[in-house]
Image (cartoon, rainbow, N blue to C red):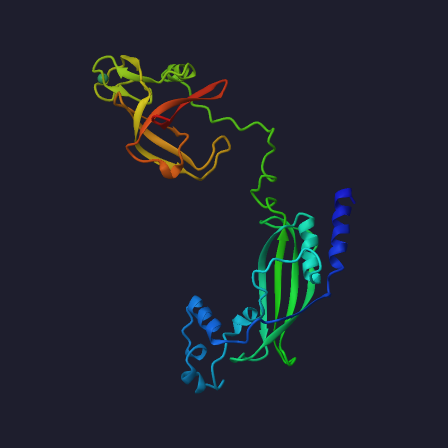
Length: 323
Ligand SMILES: [Zn+2]
């Protein structure tokens, strides 16, 4: 067993000491009452008159208004009081132990309830709670943590059992789940290189100019029509003769998309990509930088900026004009 595994086992042993331990008795602040029931059924969208209409409820087998059974937990909830860091219940002690070991996040994962009878207005409940089980360390999608299951017995102040609940939570270390930084590549691992353009005799000159941070536009030498991407022949007149001019780098967003998936390692996402209309009159596709995806607008003015991705590849990108 590695030192790390031994440490985990020792910590789990400390946790297991809490299994089967009573965490005390708690009394509900209020009796089962109409106001809380009304708020609850409003929130749930439950229009059953047995919960709110005394006359209708009186004609049922229950003889009067009952509380929705699944409200059970609401009658003895502890509220928003912060957990004491010392001198609390065994449950508080267990949670503080987990917090201290870095398992500071919590999410409820399961809730199973059993009902012995319906609850009526005026019932006053209390709970007796026992820590039912604590799992060994688990790797979950949310993170590394321990499942803690608590059994809560609900009874009236006279001691009559009315129901019980098994409640399971996951106490986990934040940032240790799938896709978390700790799971991602090491910082010193070099970023993947951008895909290479397919260089040919017809387009290499354009990428060479880009290395010098010059944005070139190919122009037909016969009819003066501009074209991009570079290609051997004019679409307008069919001429193979061409020259080029250097663009100012000013343009507007003619259209754009924001790429989310599939994610290629060399790129950062979400990635806004624009079809930029250059002021000279032709268009090209390029990344948009220094602008949030939600802030990109068709027609917005943009300026070229140069991105030296690596020693062999420099590409133009565009940023909102005027910084
Ligand atoms: Zn032409």
